[in-house]
Image (cartoon, rainbow, N blue to C red; front, side, top):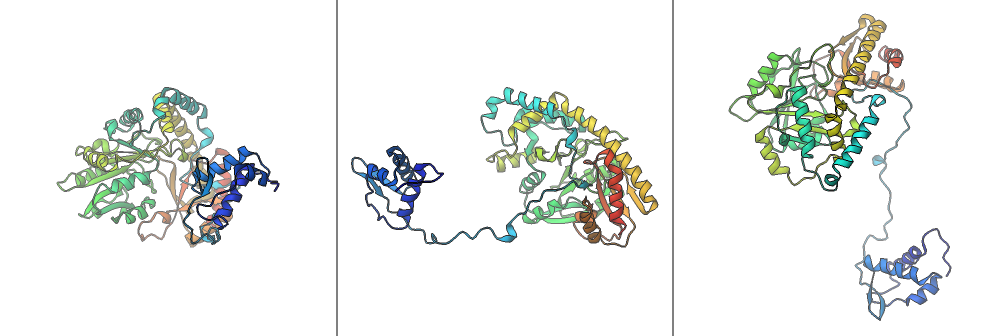
Length: 460
């Protein structure tokens, strides 16, 4: 028998013998032909036969007895062996498409064209050289101590956050951090801003927590709508997501008074894009004002670097840190350790702050031109909720068209657009048509065309 095939010859011998065993042509403990006869039968070398037989032994199809030869194992038969693989159900299949150029007002994107690749690569090379021994081992569950130490200093300098490196936990996503945080308590009630970060809604329900959507007023989260049974309160005070409201100091003190009580309560402060402020100085974090040590501080590098970096973190108060170590010390770190060490040098060597400063100036220029163009094209029919912070703002447009009709038209015009309704945690009595205008991925030259597209979409 001459074998003509692209496979290696030993693989063909392996396949034929395995097929004969599984089809019942060989009985349990039956002896195979000698290696020489098998090689003659398949017209291959004895070495190829030996490799094939050894592989069948490793997988449990054969066993060998010294000086006696190779024998078939007594194999348990698989009842469904004849059943054909039917393929993946149609509803589970993905159909990736090549995206043509999309004009994007997404709040989730960032501008990679201005990312300092050379500086990042330099820090990565340095990290690989300086920490090569550490990279050869699994990292600490919370992330490498050196990186946590660098971040602790940075947060204290930039946001006034008071913490030790031991209090910082790195994770690949904010959702992962929130999931871990919820398990540190018995399920109770958590209050979230409405509209707010809707991605947490399903997570909260899966953890069997009760969610209380809290309405906003002109100062942010309305603390008077928070009920007594709330144990955790999630807020974005530096730049409320998605409305953009900056919480004034008086409301911040109201929140701190709410948490400073005998019963167990904690505030979760999400500082997701606090690095970007325009026309105003940075506002101290809520955590920096909290003397009761009841604030969990959360942040991410998705906005200042890029979403694909997958580095988020939280700073736990001491009491919650004790619980965290008891519950999660067995887990492996979910972050890329080399990326964390690269970030360590990126911050320590000054590249990070330089990058943020450069991008803040760029985004401010984009934001100003975009606002001016929107006001010129739409005149009084469009209202801007302009807050000089972050990478998005809200627009309100007078129209009788529905959100669905507008978003369908946006897709037809190749315009990425998100309505505020997407972030409702509970229905709100608001008949205004509102959209989030993200500008991080816009280029200056693109703005007039982007605004014209928006006008076509909104004036249906």
